[in-house]
Length: 254
Image 1 (cartoon, rainbow, N blue to C red):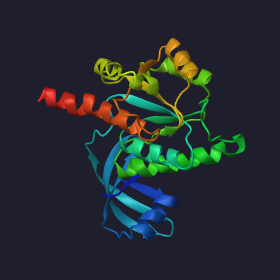
Image 2: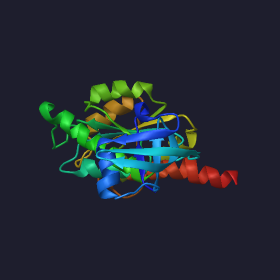
Image 3: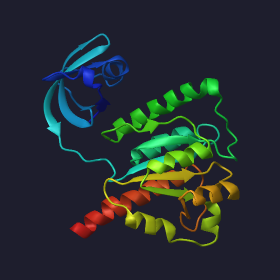
Image 4: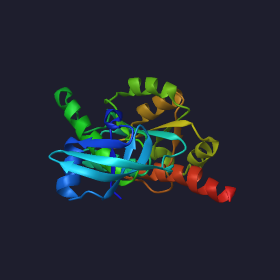
């Protein structure tokens, strides 16, 4: 069933009003008709709604019931992604959103080949925010991950002070055969915690960056015995978090 995020200002006592791009999607792309049902998420709550009226660039839908849903990860995971080349960040945001990421921070790493010029940063963030919205709707998330402003390493370290846990995906750690840091970190986490995960660009992090992050409380982790592409690493991590805190814990509880 198609899902849409609706601003709270468009929620009324018994109905929601859907406008602009979402309304056009309902009318022109999905070709829905009165009587069709959709899910509308307002302020983190999902509602089953029945379309009542379609006109121009606006749709009105009656609220039928609240939807009991718990699709969010038990912990809040923010991906600090070394800015990659081309459209790789699009893929990272899309797939990372599907896997449960809470936010993405573009990280200006020493080996980042791509540079976000200041006069184009707002446009790039808006593009990525739209990708996050579409992926959150497709995966029936209750929140849309936030795309933060780009940060250098010093500001990233400062931002890390507000997180419960902090890790760095470091290629040299993986090459040395270290396989225990990530499982140990995941085992410590519990519902309501927050995790900041730093992932390097195509060339990885420099030894100086890794050492500086480690001195600031970040745990250097290998993501298994294979070297992952920059766009694969965040998906690997989010999958590991989901397995440890959702699938495995559920299996143990049952």
